[in-house]
Every structure is written in structure tokens, then in C-alpha cells.
Length: 114
Length: 110
Image 1 (cartoon, rainbow over the protein chains, first blue to last red):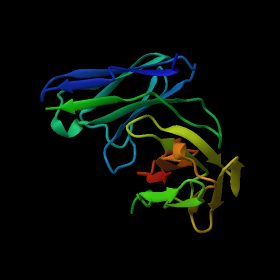
Image 2: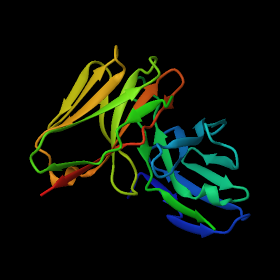
Image 3: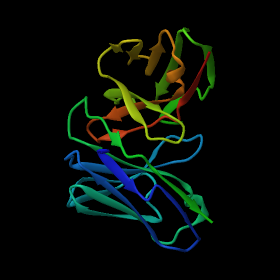
């Protein structure tokens, strides 16, 4: 079984709808992240959480919210979806470390907003 | 200026060739560096990490030049399976920030 899972894997929704993307991990990591990827651009950080009580905005948090329900679960919500939120969304986890800390990614959710 | 700059490619090379990618980063405080591999529309996967001057793992070698603020990835004896996009990722440890480049695409041809 995959260490980091995301649901749904694909989603089509309409402008104005509220949707939730979910991420679960079995790696036991405290740190979790949400990124989006658009063609020709690098991954951009939306939100990150260092533990259940610690949630922080990333560089592009407007229009998104998150919930860290447990160490293993981190959900991303689009309150009112708009077409420019069409993207590939990745969840990632990491364990605190110094120079060697690396991130492990889920398989991604492809979101299309019509 | 972008935090991370990579040549998008594509680099089209024959099997067995040696190919090198460069990546420049703007934040001189970056402390560690990673190369991730991403297959089309799939998740990035860690290929190598670099902290000091360089790292080697089989056919892959990463070199770091802090003075010039660039890192490179060298792939020797290219395989068809090396075809992918390679992401350069500097990291600021104190702020736990990972900066993802947009990637360099490699196509290895038979």
C-alpha cells in the first residue's frame, strides 16, 4: 500500500462549488503539505502543517482552506471553486530533520473546474 | 527573479549518452538541495540529495557550487527509463522552505 494517499484522484466540478481533497499518510510524519502544479510552473505551496495544532499559509493560500484532523490526515478545501484553480494537487509529508529532510508525495489529484 | 531557474528542455539524447542539467538558485541561504524525478503527471520522487559539494549514486552525480549558486545533475549511460522531468529543489532549513523548479525534461531515444 502507498504511504501517502490522496482522494479523489480525479475530480470535475463547477464554478462556485465547494470541494474537499483528502490526504492520508501511514509514514507517521508530523509535517504535511499541500501543493499545486500548473503546466510550466514549479510546485507552489498552498498550506503546510507541522503538527495537528500548527497550520500555516503558503505562498498561494487565497481561495483555499485546510484542516488537520489527525497526524495522518490533512484535507484541502476549495470554498468556492473557480476555473483558475484547475491544476494538479499534491499532498506531501516529511519528518523534521536538518539538511537531509525530504518530502514524500502522494499520487496527486487532478482537478478541473468548469 | 525566480527562486529557481531550470532549462525546460527537452533534452533529446540517445541511449547510452551522458547528459547534464544545470539549475541556478537565487537565495544564497539555501542549505540543502534535492533532485526529484517526475514522470508525466505523476508525483515527484526523490532522486538525490546534496548538502556539501556533491553526491554520487550509480549513474547519477549531483554537484553543488555555492559560490555560483548552481547545482548540476549528470546522468551517465542514459536509459530509456530515465525519460522524465527532473526538478531542482533548494531548501532553506531555518524556514523549512522547499523551492521547486519547473523542471527539465529529458527524452532518451533508442
